[in-house]
Each structure stands twice: as structure tokens, then as C-alpha cells.
Image (tube, rainbow, N blue to C red):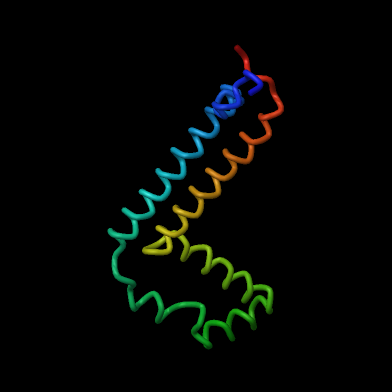
Length: 119
């Protein structure tokens, strides 16, 4: 028994570190809850969207004729990015972004461990 704060690991954390960990937990919970709500309220996919998409060979041929292969690839990337913000994909996107932001808070908070706690 050294008589220090060995029994209380929270005593080793600085106030800034505690705030960052708390912010990470709040952001993670908010992101997961928002993702679940968005998933439950997402409308059914529209058949017209898939009918007139970039997958239509006539559209791809015309786009390639006008802009080349780069235009086709950019159109595919644009359509993929657009699809992240609709329906159930939006729920997954919000949940993943919340988890990444919470992970960033935990990661940054970990590096404040070198600071001495202020008494």
C-alpha cells in the first residue's frame, strides 16, 4: 500500500480529460439514438430513383461520349455520396459519424493524460 490514489483511477485524470471523455460518451449516445430514430422513420426506397440512376447504360454511354471515363467515375462517386443522405443510409451515416466524433474525443482525451491533475 503506497497510500496514494491507487484505488481511485479517476483521480489520475485531469479535468480537461474528464470533460473530453464525457463529451465522447454524450456524442456517441446522441449519434446512436439519432441513427436509430432516423432508421425507424426512413421511408421506403423509391423505384423511380433506381430506374433513372447512373446504372442506366444509355446515360453512361452518353456521359462517356461527352466527358470521357473521368466524367462517368465522377458521376458514380457523386451518386454514391448523394445516396448517403437519404433513407436508411442516412441513419447509418449519422451513427458512424457520431462514433467517429466520439472516438476523436476519446483519442484527444487520452493525450491529456500526461498533464498533471490540478488540485
